[in-house]
Amino acid sequence: NLVPPAVRNRASDLNEKLKLLICESSKKNCDCNLDKIDLKLFATSFNTWLTDANDATKLAVLEWVQLLFDTIYDRFSEYVPLLFNTLLDITRSESLKVVESSLKMLCIICTSTNSSEKYNPSFEVFLTGILTNLCKNKFMQFLSQGPFIINYICKYLDPIDVYFKLSKITLNLFNKEESRTIVENLNIIMLTSKETRGLRNFLIHEEDKKKYNVFKTIFYCWGLNPVSALSLSLLSGYYELSSELVNQFQHLEPSIQSLMQFDHLIQLLESPTFTCNLIS
Image 1 (cartoon, rainbow, N blue to C red):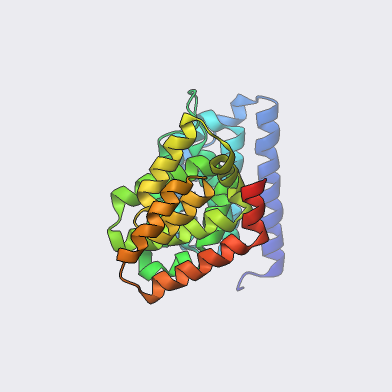
Image 2 (cartoon, rainbow, N blue to C red):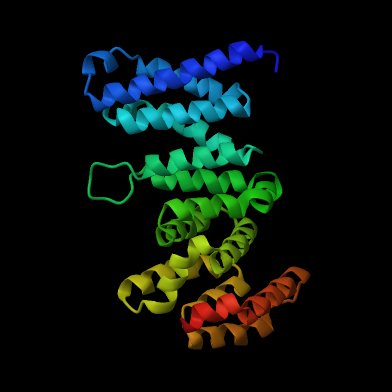
């Protein structure tokens, strides 16, 4: 706010011209120009601005990160590890635009690979960092931005892969109390979001070994939260297992939280959205 409008406009104009120059040089394969760019200095400066600057500056920096990643990936990818943890950190921002832009960049990084693999090793690091951030401060961000963040990741990446990996991370990294809360929230997102429809359809309609492996992995984790485990088995068409789970509920000590989850599950089972999923 202390910067005069004329200076701000001039800086914005210069920024756009620089980005245009990078794009044009890349398209014309003008290596003589691009090779002169000190990308390590760029990455270091980006890191500082993403950490300390205001939201508008962070968004401008994130545009630059994606631009360099898209135009000169072979050279800039070497410096991406310098930015990775900072990109994870700013997914905790109160600005949804900053969160969305950082998530987009992280998803792009995870799927950038020269091998036949769908994802590179940063995929697990990314999802581990996201879960860890969401669970800090008594799950405050999970309650406020959790659905937005998980849905965005599932929109950009395959929700089957995302939930498969999240289930493994939850089992390996968090204690039982934390895991129950994580599963409860992930389960609601899985059952209700349009971004996770691909996972729901896969669990409902597929009958191959892959479905069983995906179901088994998620179920082992969902088993920490009985109501979530029941909803998963019902969704996947394993009705005998669902019946066994219901029989086991009589041995559980009732709590307000579990009763609220049962009530929510009944509402979901009676909803047109869930019914359409099962009969489609």
